[in-house]
Length: 438
Image: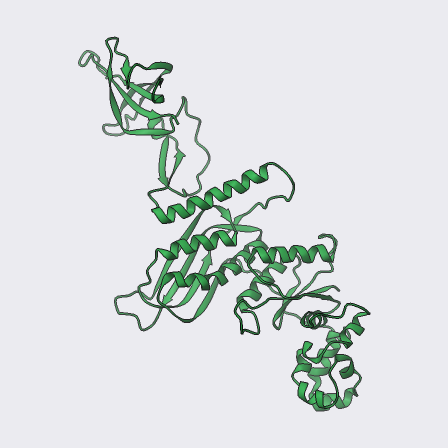
């Protein structure tokens, strides 16, 4: 067997061990390499003998795991390989671990604190002259069991591979939901971002193990029990991204923009982050293909638009979508950005579609030949495209001929000539400016 022991470095100074959330995140990352992952005291251990060939050796696998942990915002401490899980954890605790000799000889040179069962009796063992695991193993086993109990001998035998180890394997949940109790009552929403980053790291590790991403997140907070009577027990906000992502930095910036514009109705004592819908995320190849830079630029543009949408308001950043309709001016629909995923693309428009519509259409004057004028004479480029539609809506009947004209000063224009159903009743028809091509 080849066990790898992974330890997290605590984010906050003064903490001896990482948080449970960071260990869960690290375990979920390791599940992307092997299903045999377990939590062992303050570390994560993974049995990787069946995965070494797939990932091109122990060193390449470890480097890849470290890179994914860095992307998820996890800071890893020393790690170590060993034939046993307890042995790997003991070597990872040593700073630095011995690298020469056989496995048993390397363990013999470790101090007692690297094995938790021995560390519990460190004071008594030190008086007996034992400071290394090798010296502890040379003591009479029967006397050692009577004085310190059988648990010490069992841990020693398991670390050296003389007894089998039993582990409770980690499993990925079907959906992500993580809760964090705050160390104090938070009165201002932007302060929640520092605590929410811990939950975001867990989320990104969970998504990496699932090979998935998200387009929507929900951050909820529980208000303090001493709140006013007219204040609800909880509050929440929902984040929406333009595309599927699991980028920790991007999600953190977006959450910070939302929290900066949020006011807490009462102090918060607990937060919960959840993602109900997971979407497949196709990761980019590490090759030198030209399309990679285009994809990165597209992601950066989406991240910028997300921040602008939060800062300026949902109605200030809009996105155009095509939809099925026989009326040309109804084929375009503008809505707040980011728009939800659309269904199958509609059929292609029968003629050119302008970038911007003029709403309402602007009436135009005509010359003596009944040709439209707009800051001077116009030149026809295409048309007419005849349209008779909208009869199913009250007052929605459209009887028009659409044209594309060129203006020397305003570029390409989208005009229509309105034809009345009864020419005898109104022989004079009208021209309107309905769109501009960018």
